[in-house]
Length: 95
Image 1 (spheres, helix red, strand yellow):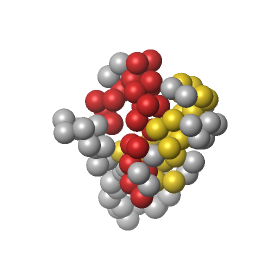
Image 2 (cartoon, rainbow, N blue to C red; image 1 turned 135 degrees about the vertical axis):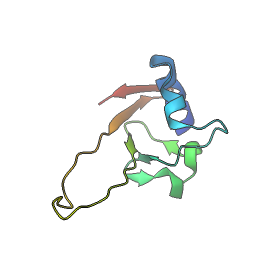
Image 3 (cartoon, helix red, strand yellow; image 1 turned 90 degrees about the vertical axis):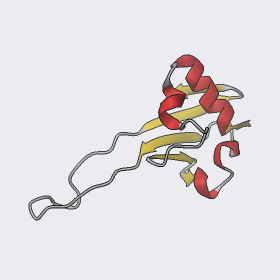
Image 4 (spheres, rainbow, N blue to C red; image 1 turned 30 degrees about the horizontal axis):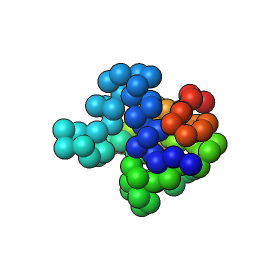
């Protein structure tokens, strides 16, 4: 088992610059980013100190603001998500 912060640190070491897209200058998760561990929002768990079990899925999903127009159905648009699977202590692989 690892803490989410360790998984994200490992991701940063594999992809430099990734962390600055997730966290602001104060080290807080940016408000337009949602992070889930095993489909649970980390904001309702222990934040970046949430435990990530071996084999658990970590999803990083940008929060979107949408304005609907009369010509735009509510289901239109696509979201970008990055999903990581914690394989073992300190390692993350893309899934």
